[in-house]
Image (cartoon, rainbow, N blue to C red; front, top):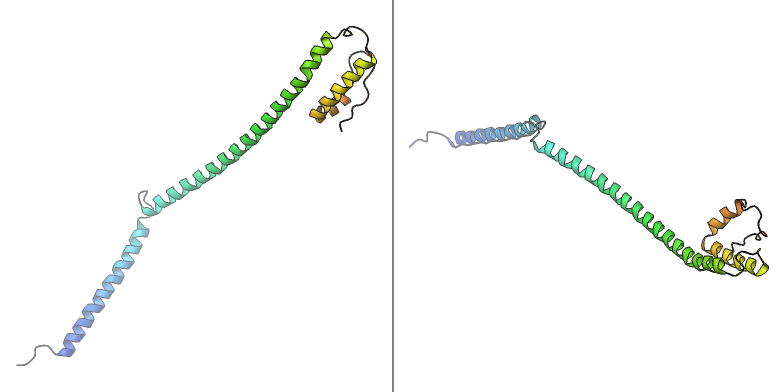
Length: 158
């Protein structure tokens, strides 16, 4: 029996088939790569969806950062407002009894005597301890009372 095809011919045929298959696979891979790039401009393509999601993420991160800064500023403002409210409350607690005492004092309508001046100086000093900035502003403002009584000495903020 004579073989129709020799072993060498069969090997050469198999090599050709393998080469053709490899060439087809390479062409298919190249075509798939080009195909993705060819359709990447479409709105439903993966690249466009990724771009949209990335842009949305960046916007959200920027919004969160802005909101965090806003919250931090509001928190600081709340702390300052609470401190100011406490200071106002302390000043009222200090001045209300003094005002009542001054109005109900038997010498409220008489000229200012030294004991009353001393009492006013003491309350003035305590007020300056609570709000030193207010004392500096008040010292710069001239007295509009018309000089009805003796002037108080300069304030000592310390």
